[in-house]
Amino acid sequence: MTTLAHLTDLHLDHWPANLDAAMDLLAGTDPDVILIGGDNGNDDGLRRTVEALGRAWPEADIAWVMGNHDLWRKPYRHLWSRFSDITATYLEGGNLETDSCTVVGTYGHYDYRGGLATIPLERYETFTDGRHVWNDRFIDRLGRTNPQIAAEIAELFWHRYQAAVARGLPIVVLSHTWPFAPTDDRSRSFFDAYGSNQLIGDAILAAKLRPAVLFCGHTHRADRWEEFGFPMINTGSDYSEVKVTIWDLERGTIPGASSAGHEP
Ligand SMILES: [Fe+2]
Ligand SMILES: [Fe+2]
Image (cartoon, rainbow, N blue to C red; front, side, top):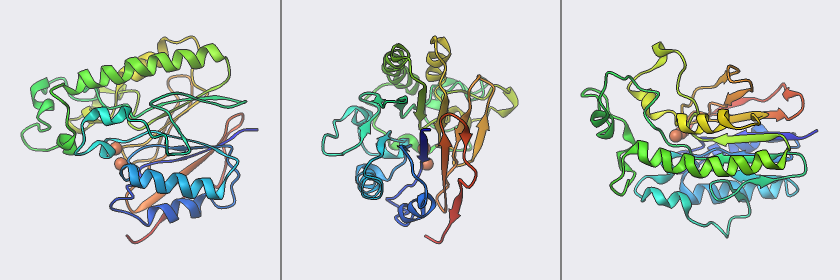
């Protein structure tokens, strides 16, 4: 039995109590692999999270990805910085290989395919449809478009996913944004353009082996999709209501995986 724990969107820079809330939810569990899913509260929040988890579960493997908020006021290539002082596997740089599974991960980003086709690319690039504003204008894109950045990220993910397929063990995927755009056109919206990188999903579906399970976050809404032949779970932590998912790799979700609301 391999037990996975997924926590995401703790946003510790503005919600520092969320780390204790997550630790409370995990108390009494015995995870073999702990996945930290992005919007961690910048590099400092990530460090604190890894340290707390490592103290509580010294035998567990810990792996992590960034979220879009962790890239604010930084060039997007911060995504490929080395974090050699952090005692956890940074999945943007390489897979976590355990005796029972391979974990492949990415921040993800967005290629706009979740959005409305009636809104032109230029509008998405300026983060407004004329009425609403998407806040990721704080990421320094170094002159590139968001679909170009999404493609750069997906290309590297594809190579890591292929390495996981070659290994032959069950594959666990961790992404911050959704790897699939909404399949129902009615679910598309201006904001959904910034929710998914379908190029990651395309890489998964083109491979010979599907994930055993996929975890994501970013939308702050708990959700579960099965339509791609494997469970895709959005744990759905929100700023004031932390959630975690506990998952048995062989049997699926473990009852009791829960959430906790608290005052900031
Ligand atoms: Fe978030
Ligand atoms: Fe996010």
